[in-house]
Length: 242
Figure 1 (tube, rainbow, N blue to C red):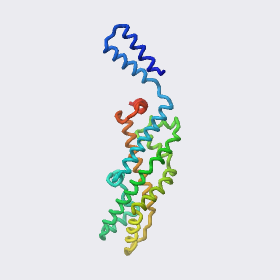
Figure 2 (cartoon, rainbow, N blue to C red; figure 1 turned 180 degrees about the vertical axis):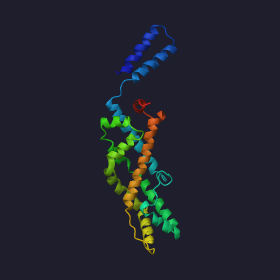
Figure 3 (cartoon, helix red, strand yellow; figure 1 turned 30 degrees about the vertical axis):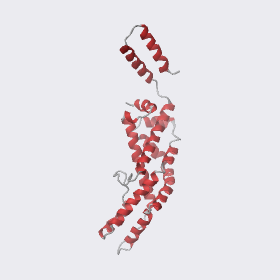
Figure 4 (cartoon, rainbow, N blue to C red; figure 1 turned 180 degrees about the horizontal axis):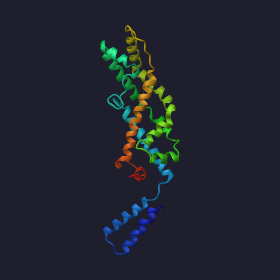
């Protein structure tokens, strides 16, 4: 039996014997409850809460990003034409191939949306190694400390595992074919240097970055908004920072 369960019945019995009113009983209950909540957080509670908050952020982020237009219609996530070959986009638009460029950009983002739907297991596995020290550092860190932890600890492994997923979706959405057509048209122009950037690596990096944006949003919400703490554990652990 925990401390709260021991204290509340005893407090009520004493007050009843003293002839206190219902209002007094209610106030006493609140005082005892608050006292119970002052019990220090345990290591297991902090670790569990941080893993839970990350899991929720990942789940919500993956669901949002994987919806149609999850990337394409979100200015914060939308993947543009590769920066290092922006001259290709500019040149093709000038000679009337703007629709081809737009079609490629849309399908590029569709690829990211499809890949995002398969991202959750990769991220979930990445949080299983969180230590007690990690958890307390995250709890007392910046509003995106948990997200930064995830970025830091997944690193190249996440990218390597996500790359084939993005590669497959680029093929499924025909983004690779559209991009090949665009590059071929550009390379046929006079007085230009051929280009052939790594589209798969670019799309992978941008798709992952977009997911982290959404995960950070969810973490910030849980930290700042009590209503976003939908479990007793989240309320207890993150409430300790209020």
